[in-house]
Image (tube, rainbow over the protein chains, first blue to last red):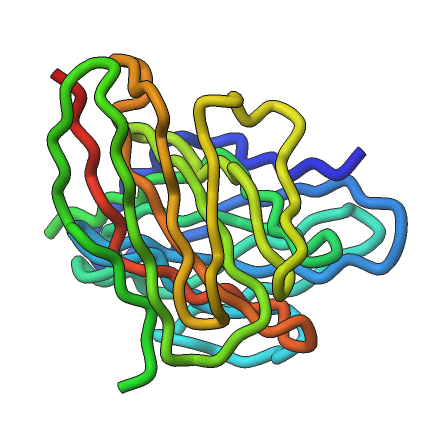
Amino acid sequence: AQRVTQPEKLLSVFKGAPVELKCNYSYSGSPELFWYVQYSRQRLQLLLRHISRESIKGFTADLNKGETSFHLKKPFAQEEDSAMYYCALRSFQKLVFGTGTRLLVSP
Amino acid sequence: DAMVIQNPRYQVTQFGKPVTLSCSQTLNHNVMYWYQQKSSQAPKLLFHYYDKDFNNEADTPDNFQSRRPNTSFCFLDIRSPGLGDAAMYLCATSSPRSGEQFFGPGTRLTVL
């Protein structure tokens, strides 16, 4: 069965510290993975997708098929990164979301 | 700007009184989705349309129905809202090729 696991409900860091939001998945087949972000009072929006292999707002994520992981990383967190982050796996036309991790970046 | 629009943004209804939420899109996407999102939880897919084909999730209550009269519009009907149906309802669209979903701002439903 397809499943996405985000083990941390809350991640609290200071500004300038490195950030890693963990995501593990289970999927039989070639996975397509996304990170979505939801800032306070804003709509859920795509942050990045693994097939693009790009950096958005300083965030990167690498698909590790051996470890079935797609962790989101940023070397230096900013206060404006505070938001809810969801890892998601594409299954046909649907997205399977993880439970989300709230990132809180303090000054 | 091409986007996903949801109306109203806030909806208050009474226990058992039917309510309809609407969603429109200017992206011309084939697929439209309805999600329910409760506080501090991930969005939960209720159903989706691929063109006119309706796909219900197995655990979506019968109380929830949907209509898609054309490509641009999709409606969520809650026939007899209960207190447990109070939530944010999100509409999203995607094109089959891309896989990326574009979300609307949501409608927050309160049930009194």
